[in-house]
Image (cartoon, rainbow over all chains, first blue to last red; front, side):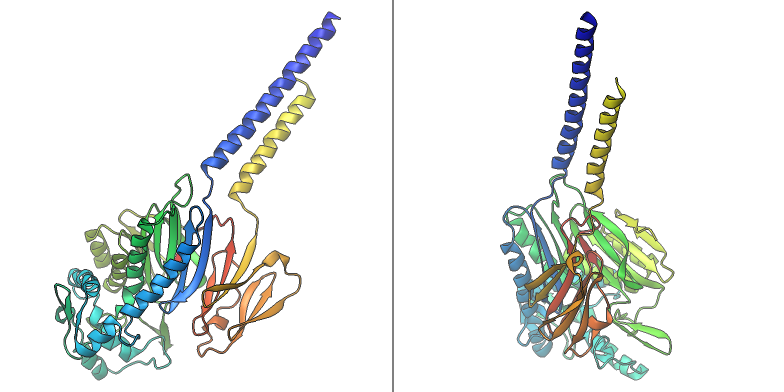
Length: 339
Length: 118
C-alpha cells in the first residue's frame, strides 16, 4: 500500500514536471513571438514620376497614408519634371528664370555636390542627355562635334541661386531626373513625421526611404540591391535603421553598338558615358536628394574618388565593378547574397 | 523518469522547434497583385492556380500560372514588360508604364527584404 502511494506520488510529480516544462516552453515561444510581432501593414504600388512607386506602411489603421504618399509623388512630378508643361523646371528651361524656394533648395544641394565632385555631377547635363536620348526611340551615338556643341551648354556654375530666385544661362537645359526621386523621398519623410504611422518603406523608382520601425522589436530595414547583370536577382542586402538608399547603374538605360555598352550615366566633363570599370554604386545616407546625387556622382567619379566623396558627406557606399567585386565604404551594413 | 515521459518531453521540444522554424522559414505563400492606374484590380495566390489563364488589364494581356505571372502582350511601344519574362519571386515588380499597369509578387510574410534599390 505504502509502495503504491509512493509510486502514485512519483507519477503525479513527474506529470507536474512535464506539464511545467511544456508550459515554460510555450511561454518562452509566445514571449519571443510577441517581441518579434509585426505591425499591421498596407502595401500599394502605382505609377508616378514615370516609374513604379511602392509604399508599404506599418501601424494601426494604415491605408489612407499610402494614397497620400503616391499622390504626393504625382504632384511633385508636376512641379519638377521638365516634361510637364508649366512646371518649375519647364519654366526655368524656357525663360532661364524661376522664383521658387523649393527649386532653390534643390539646386543649392545639387550645386554643392557638383562643386565637391569637380563637375562629375551636374544638373545642367540636359543638353547632353537629349543628344544621346538613351532609353528613347531616338537614342544614338553622337559624333564628336555634336558632343562638343552640347558640352558648351553644360556647366553648373551658370545655374545660380539668389534667395528663392533660380537662373541659368540661355540654352542650358536643366533635368532633375537624377535627384527627383530622392527629393520625393525627402518630402514623404516630412509627411510621415507628422503621421501616426509606426514605420514605412517607400520606393520611388528604386530610390528608397526607410522610416521608423518595421516591427515592435525594431529590427533593421532590409533593402535589397539589384544584381547589375541580372534584373531578377539581388546581389546583397543593406540593413539600415532609418535613412535613404539610392543606386545608380549602367543597366538602367543603355544601348549597345559594336559590342560596347553606352549607358545613361553621362560624364558632364567629357560628354560620354562614364567608363571606369564600375557597373553599380549604391549610397546610403540621411537625405534622399543627397543619396541620389551622390550615387550618380560616385558612379561617374569611379571607385577611389567616389569613395572620397561619399566619406566627405558621411555617407555609406557600395561599389560594384564589372567583375562583380564589391567594395563598401563608410558605415554601411551590407551582406552579399549567397550564390 | 519513464520512457513515456521522456518521449513526451522530446515531442514537446520538437513541436517548439518547428514553431520557431516556421517563423524563420515562411511557406511559399506567393500572391500576384495587379494594379491598373494605382488601383488593385486583381490578386491571386499562385498556389491556387490549377491551369494557366490570361487576364486583360488596360491594354495588357497577362498570363498567370502556378509558376508566376508575365506580360503576354501589350499595346505599348517598347514591350519592355513582355521582355522581362515571368515574375515568380517575392518582391519582383514589373510595370507597363505607358499603360499604367503594375504587377507585383508579394507575400504576407516576406522575410528576405523590405524594398529593392535599383
